[in-house]
Image 1 (tube, one colour):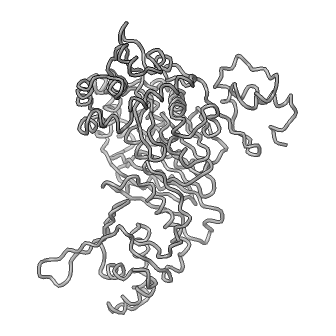
Image 2 (cartoon, one colour; image 1 turned 60 degrees about the vertical axis):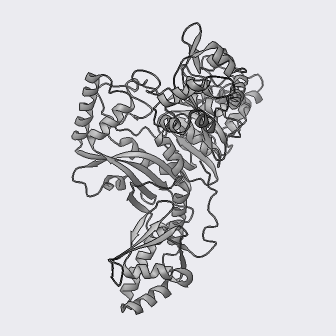
Image 3 (cartoon, rainbow, N blue to C red; image 1 turned 90 degrees about the horizontal axis):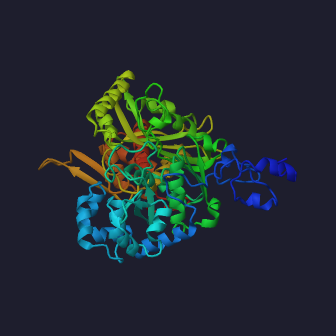
Length: 603
């Protein structure tokens, strides 16, 4: 019998210490006492999962947290959203206020151009200068300026929400960064996070909640966007990935080890409830927030799509250190790249059949390795598709400097020297000569997928350092669909009709007066923007590839034309053709091959 369909008394005993108050199940059990010894919002952590047969998925995190925005004032949140819209505190509004040059400087954390623009504009109530000065630039704002800019919320309302506090009797300063964000599907939004090092002095707090940075934007841009039932945002931070997942997932579970991060996420969701199409009174209908480390909060569950910007930064471990000594937003507390290897090994077990996981990560490249991806290959479980794209590679010294600067640990010369030395010693202990950064795509097989005698799962490792078209997610999804198509036609590629993708162009190089080109290049104008050096026969195939003839007919004609009419020539040419197909230079000519593609969501 299902454990949730037992006698009334047993239900009371089972659920009372587990569900936060108020909870629909508790309201239905009339007269159920609530254990006052268990703080609201923390009781649910005793539950190890949910009952699949009854499909009860609890909303775990509901409590406010000290030193984080308060989300338990729904009326104030509505007033704040109205004030922000009235101020035109949007991406376009701020860009118009400060100008293009200052806006570009702001994106690089350079504040002076925007500060000068705001000071010149003043802080009248019909423009966003006041919130820009307060939250984006970290400047003090007077009582009168704040009251004029926020007539509904008022300075005291901002204080109750944990967004500002008094500097002195007449001025206020920001306690968080609250800035505009825009989405093609949800429109104008706002995202709260901790103040960065450019907005406040000193080293970042250890439980710092990161805002919208380059890494989080990269993940949002590379995520595929199918319509799914359940999605997981692992390591949610300020909740930006959850924002995007809500566009195409029926339900999103967002986890983090940091209760402050979950508090920021909950605040951001409720502040943007209208744009995200959420019911503030029933947030759990669409979103579940859970606190815990790595996969612990979702043990035993499965998801159709998992995205993660995990705390992957490699950090030298110290004897006797605790979580209080770690920057939890970037440091998972494990040695080397163990957090990434752990996720790559374990995430597929949380995927439904045919489900996909996408994550960012760092990986160590040891001296003497045959390839940069040698170690990563060993992490991917058997029978799981794996696609790794390395975007950047740093030396140990360059890596150390990058992350010491990130946390403002370069300001104290003695501390900087100590930490820098620790980084180099740590990398040397594992014989690390470089550190790679990039993304990983993992995909389980759909029902009736790979058989023991069938084709091997996808194993693709690419180093791409040039700029890509953004968002790249739709092109990743298309590449996976081409992979599936090629798997389905493993034995009959010669019988298929192919054509050149619309964005592909051919480039020929030849010496002046030469009869034939010495180099023929195929270039993609969209997506991954790859370039392929063509052989004579492959160039001939592409030129004839208009969907009229089958691949086999073209290869036979080329063999006869080039005097290589043998089976070996045709097989080698078809193998090259398959690579062009997988890379997106060629696509099936059948209009229906891509008919099951998911709806892609813009950013």
